[in-house]
Length: 276
Ligand SMILES: Nc1ncnc2c1ncn2[C@@H]1O[C@H](COP(=O)(O)OP(=O)(O)OP(=O)(O)O)[C@@H](O)[C@H]1O
Ligand SMILES: [Mg+2]
Image (cartoon, rainbow, N blue to C red; front, side, top):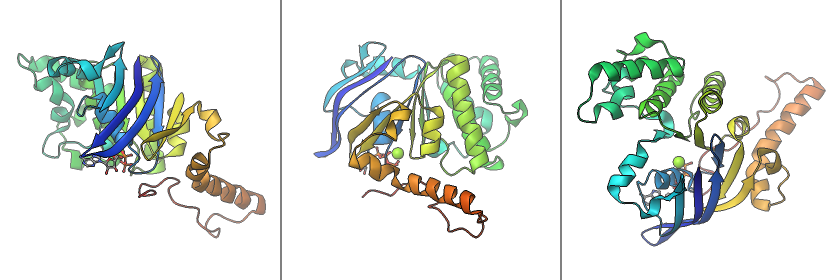
């Protein structure tokens, strides 16, 4: 369904991505992992055609997006729903306006149809329909993230969903409900997805396959189960904080030290900012 083939991308002569290749099969979720600045969001921007690569091919349903004109790219975008990093919503618009935004952009919009679609997508993401008139700042962080997902779904019944850090900044319970929703959209509606994250737990939960990026290069591509067994120093370095958190938790269980008195594990296994 989606294929990146030997993508090279630079900004002002500075190499951002080098020889990036991967495939996402129909109905699969590929997780893109990597430290801050490794090029994760750039991959989504390339897929949306917001920026163009120096070389390589980006295939969607067999069509090379690096060769299509802007008009065709606009059509392709209609089958891609994007959940932006931090779930960015328009602060000055109601929930309904945020979710219906891409539909309202088109001419000849039937307002009843938009309202029906807004309510339908709110239901799909597990939000009450009567939230339509609320403003984003009247919602919890988890609800805002759901609205962002509803907005991506409302687009044109997209077959591809892109999520950029969909759980960052949420408490563990809210984060879990968002990853449950992402799994539900994959399994109940067969959406093909790319999810960018630096959270290894989310990655294992929703990914069928994983790409680990390091300084714009793919250093791992494979099944989630193989990541832990990969014998690459860069993969080990990436997994180290997570492993030490798990080891500490296991030690606490075996010695019976209450969590409140045990030394704190690193708060976020892969917090952004890990790499220059
Ligand atoms: N418009 C731009 N101009 C210059 N450099 C840019 C631009 N956009 C991205 N970059 C650079 O490209 C690299 C990759 O950025 P990208 O946003 O893809 O990282 P990321 O992996 O998503 O990081 P994060 O986890 O912090 O979101 C970074 O070094 C960034 O500074
Ligand atoms: Mg990013």
